Length: 463
Image (cartoon, rainbow, N blue to C red; front, side, top):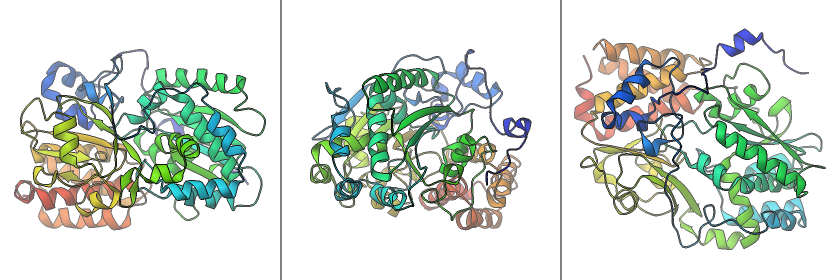
């Protein structure tokens, strides 16, 4: 039975609507650490209503939504999986996949070791298998293109350069799961990308890749960071208030409209055609340990060579920052926020850590979406903390009390210089252990990493 849809006014009040035609300025983390490069733009960002936290132009921060230049794109892997030149026949992998049984296709993906590229690194084949095993009927494949992590712009560039790879990957996933309907949920902040995808979908239908049996529609978000969380995104697509759902049930069994749903981000789905064409062993030969293949990494504007890099897992953070990024144009690195603003901060002494799921987790950081936001001495740890806490408080969906009250209270206490060590410990613990989703849990990870790596600076924040 469908869930009742609340009045539109109640739903609309959740979103951060903005006029796409006027120039707007970004408050996101990458633009915050670059604020002194263009104080006038930063002042406009701070005065903007509603707050705008990312336009996917972190390589040009502080950024405007009208900035047209694309970042430099560099492949630093033995073989490019995602950023190589377009192939003459963009749907040859789909034909190959459709010649396989669903079980064989899932086994192929499993042999590759592919893990989700959008956050927790969950094995992709397990999701495919879970949806495939659900009883036949209406199933969905949803591409999460709500790339809202300030500091990351990989999905935006990938969709602009190679939209057919995403479409083909979704069609391959549909064959593996038995899905008949696909949806790309794309950010309101990416209007030009939306137009590129619309044209690519029309071309895919002309080529026969979409249509009978499986087709894809586009749904545009209306401005909300939390819609990057898969269940909030599904609520948004359904026309509901996009709060995070309690799990279980998981989307693989009860997702969009209560039907089995595969949700993956753009990069994950766009990787599937390469695996089908080249084989699981070829993909597994790239990367290291339990982190196989390549990853798109975004470097922010403080680097001498900002841009989008395709690298193999196992490359060290030092190589990413110093060899590829060329170090910072403004001075020595004070720290690097890896995997999004709600993740861990890595200090300079840990830059020899390999870029991998478990390896970063061991030092309190995360692969996340692949954004690397470096900052220098122009940004103090207290300023960084205040910015991220304010971001989390503003973007909380309010569904769970730890996030709704904890982030807002921490923001107020920091501003009033009344934050105590006891309050900090209690709030961080509550966020870590009782938050419904990665927004509250991620804020806890961020706070814990600051306590671990910058203890003197954090102690100075307490009353």
